[in-house]
Length: 457
Image (cartoon, rainbow, N blue to C red; front, side, top):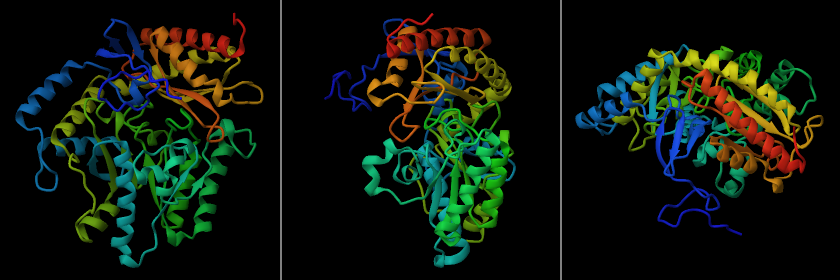
C-alpha cells in the first residue's frame, strides 16, 4: 500500500513512499535544506559529487562556456573542449586506452561498451561472427538501460524486466565475505572467482562470447568489495586465450574515487574497454564515456566501415566535456586523489569501531568507496529479513543526525541483505571525516537498539 509521502507536484519521483526533503543549496561536503538543516553528503549522491557542491571555479567556467558555445552535435562538429577532455581522460586511464566515446551517463557508457565489443567482432570477422554474449556477475550493477540491465546481476532491479532482457550469462562475484566456496582467504576467493569465467566461456562456447564485464571495486550491489590482483591478472589471461574482450566498469569506482585515477590501477588491470561517468564531472553535468584500445578503434574506424553504429543527441556535448575537463583539472591541481587515499585509510580505521555493534557484519573498501554490511548475527553472517527494513532504518537515522548514506539490499540471495555505501567527496578533510564518523556512529547505535529491542552502551 502506497504511503504517498512524496510531494504533490508534477514530478514523477523515483519512490512515491519517500518524503523528499527540499534542498536549497550545496556547499562543500554539505547539502543544506530549505529549513536550514545541514546534511553531510556521505555518499556524494551516488559517488558522484567528488569535489563537493557549490564549486565557484566550476560555476564561473560554465558561465563562460555557455556564452561561447553550449551545444554542437558530435556527428558533424568538434570543439576544443571535447578534444581536451578526451586527452585528459586518456591520461587518467590505464595504458593502451586511447579513444574516448562520450555519452551522458553510466548506463549509456556500459551500453556503448557492449555495442563497441559486438561491432568490433562484426568488423573484424565479417557478419559471420556469432560472438554476442557478454558474461557478467551476480551482485553487480551495470546500469538501467536494457543492454546494461541485461548485464546487471542485481535480481531486484532485473525481475520485472526479465522478459525484455538479453539472456547474458552470470558467474559468481569476488565477494569474499559471502563467497560460495567456503574458503578463508581473499586470494582463494579471487582465484576461484576468476576460474569461473573460464568455465562459463567454455560452457557457452568461446565462439559465442564477445566480452566479460566487471567492476574493480563493487558499487551499489555489494559496496566496497574488491579482489586481490590475481583476479584481474587471470581475467586478462583467460580473455586473451578465448578471444574475449574485457570491459571494466569504472562508472562508480573511477576518476579518483578509490585513491587512484582509475581503480584499475590498484590491480594493474588491463581492460580493452573502460566505462566511466559519475565522478567524471562531479555531478556538475551529465556525462559518461567508453574508452577503448587502438585495436578496437582501428578495427571499426580505420580498417573497417569507419562508422560506429551508435549515438545519442548529447554524446560529446562540448559544455559537458568542458565541465568534466575542468573538474579533472581541479582534482589534479588540488591533489584530491592523494587526499582521497589518505582520508579513506583514516576513515576505514575509524570504522573498525563499529564492529562493537552486533549488527555490523563487514566493513570493506578502497579510498573513499566504503561498504558496511549489516547482519542479524555476526558469527554466522545471518541477514535480516526484508520486512525489518534495516537499510531504511539506518538511512532515516542518518538523516536525523544530518548524514546522507547510500542504502542498498539483496546482496545475500537477491532479496535479503542490508548495506550502505559511504562515498563522501574526495576533498573531505580529516576533521570532516571525524564529524561524519560521529554522526554515523550515533546512527548505527540507534538502529542497533531499534532492531534488537535493547539499549546499547
